[in-house]
Length: 304
Image 1: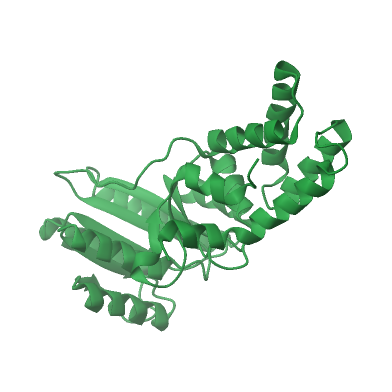
Image 2: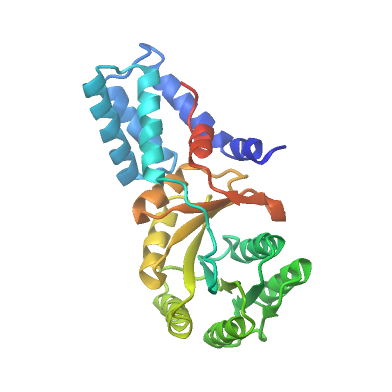
């Protein structure tokens, strides 16, 4: 199955939920009155779009209805589609800057797929002929270190890894020095999963970020939050807290192949005003692809 078809299948639950809800709301008349628009707004909230984003989208829908004097089902869905595209913004790819070290810091809570994503990115860049280095800065879990070593062996990528319990700051410091000494194109840093409400762990993350900025001031730094699509609205709070600690530059949404509500991608992008670089649909190396805004919206919303 082509990636887009798998992508569409992964969002089927949300699409069917929205389609069923919209059909139920508008079935009687085929158009939307004010009460129905309120119901549509609640439907978006239930699809994990979140209250602030749902409010923004419905303000646009109401404005379009007033301007165009068209409250038909097709007009409302089209307005909603335009609004979501606007929230997600122009698609941006995670591109490497030439002639300098690129450092990609992968962060997030436990279980979002950071280590797997790190390995998939290593494979992508190795296949593109880049000189890549991995840093196993998740020193709290031996399994994470072993998993990254597995990806290192699979992709033929050197990996800086210390024993479980080592200081993550030391791993990051030494990895940056090694990347500079070896003239690497890319340094991929896998960090420990941490709860956004544990201040000591967030302070540690901020320290890792500062070390990278201090030791590689000329590097192109991407600080990317890995978001589990199943997380729901808690992902918005996570994004805001992680952004404060490590100045996020973008997002990668994982696990869109399961029972997730795809609306969380819209909610997070709206909350932190950052691009979604990629989406993950599974464990295989090829299950990570550049985010395509229009394909996402087409997969999320029912047809007109």
